[in-house]
Image (cartoon, rainbow, N blue to C red):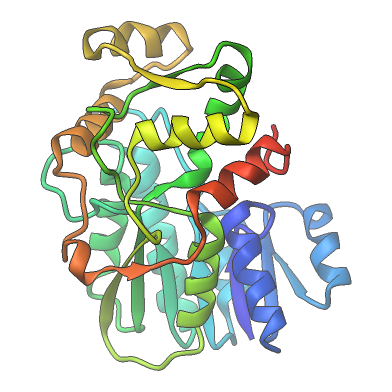
Length: 290
């Protein structure tokens, strides 16, 4: 039996589906009972827990062969990342109390970076779990291909996609959520001791220009990328309702400047099988709309 957080989202749902397909038992961890009904009908146990509540997490993890831990993203964190500090404390306490057989924690590319940025939240949580006795795999995927969901509307309407990643011909390590879920589900039944880092990217690195070219192919119309000037980011993000855009800006700087990358380099990463075109085809078809 494996506990899986985030089953109502793309990644957690993929983890659960892959485990079920392999014949494993799944305890779907949800924040509200009603959100687990679909998974109950699939044969899963249901556990209700909140990421900031160690006691509820302990009950969710107790008696399992392993747990997949997914932290809900915080795109506009408060200074000092108190949200991540709270999560780190509750997850650590729950793991130490429940003692699941192992843990796969969904971290991120660049978790080892020294520069403070939005991804530092995962750095802090990894560090909090470093001396926990339970075997832990820190799964560090690249940039999600599904982030291109934001690009569908401008690609359709104007044929011009604003890009915060540049140079536009610079390859970026990206990966599909289907590959992340599959690899996490493969890791959970494995046996290891101590802690390990698994870095994951797609079949090939992708440039922003290649994203535009793929949209053009799928939409059968001209589509191009246009870099958003770095000097405009802060005011733009503030106008969109962010209160602390600094971490997001530094995260993007990290991708563009190259320090948000894999610790082991491209040679040390696992490679997924899902292509950018396959992901964009689903996005254009509305699978991830909204």
